Image 1 (cartoon, rainbow, N blue to C red):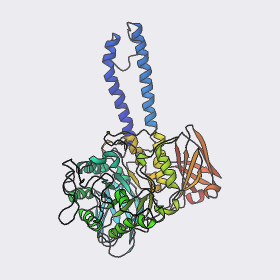
Image 2: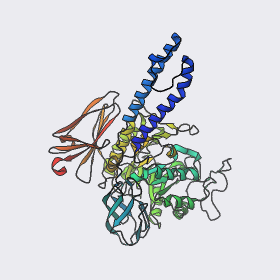
Image 3: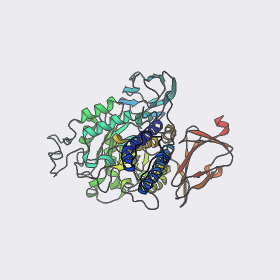
Image 4: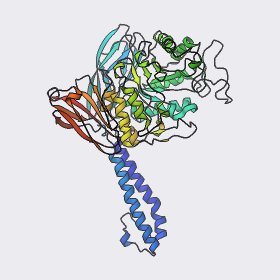
Length: 565
């Protein structure tokens, strides 16, 4: 139930830590002080302290324990996302794009006490529902068009229903991708076992119940020409020119079958150059064969990274920058399964202006976030500011991609041999990170260690109302309303006529930030809802103003009072 009651589990972990610490310290302290402490209630006054040093030590201990309990209580209070209700609550997108006659797979995201039972009214005949696990599979209808279905989830405590549109046509990726990519957790050490563990954790942690669905293998799955590592070397291709995985991936088809059995989707990586960024086999001059190979294996997404294509391109003209993506985009469209194209070429040639036309479903707008240096602010802010400037170019089927969400336990991109460690971002900064990405309709791809998820990281990643902003069917990226050295305001219009507004404090002191209706293009009184804490703040006339903590955010949804009623 970790995914249902993350805040409760965090409280339990804190209490267990306190008890554990006391049990470890009680006996040695008693021996040191010359007395035994038979129970937690023993006070300093009742101890027969035999020396001045013992009394000083007892005072220091008391201060430490008070500070520890205060700090851990503060950690618990930092959790903004409320515990999910035990009654069913359907999450995720309300629209889904698929190409005619292709394999179809969708796991219905839903929180609530399990077991759950699912039903779907008006489901096309070519699709079937696993009622126990909420997985829709089969073949997409052969006829293009819109199929409106109604999803229902039920448990012993209640039920929830939600409309869901399946749009059959040429466009996939109608909402930004959500999932996990291994790069910042494993780098060159990724294996079949690691990917399976991540997929299992996506289910057990509850992330899949909020809409996370892609499990993506980054670089280093193929063979590495010239490597002296027996796990990586050997012929890069077979006699027919088919690319071969290294020995860490003994059976790609079995791996994707496992991921699909959970209702999740599998992603993979390549480069248009002869080598990937880490020096593994690329797709140059084998583009068609590689695309068909990954489709035959059962992959649902291809991250296509520029890398060594630098040595192939004649120059950095628009023609040369587009060329490899036009080729791969065309090949993927002709496959017999839907494969999302995630373009990774760091924003060269203003890719946001043409990424969609070459077949991209998302395109990186900046360099690697893991290598972005921080200055007055952590690096994600600068990446976010750059990405926010291209709001006019995002929409259903094609999204600006500012790179992954690097929170939780993550590796060091500058020294990939170091073990992962907890992010150095403050709690407020992590909420700002997730808020900014959601407002920008960015792909929500977590790249921390899936098997070391902690309650706070899940609290940031798994807020249904924040995710609804990212996955909103209107598909608009937030526009910048104000950007100064001290504050940053984003506004995102939503399908129901409301707007999501993020007020970001860029300073190291608490700051009052306000946005008036004229700036936001609103009229009349508006109801405001705090999306992180999921409660209504009341009605406001003319403007909304609030105090925002250092490097923090207040994320609200504003709706006309008349519409709300």
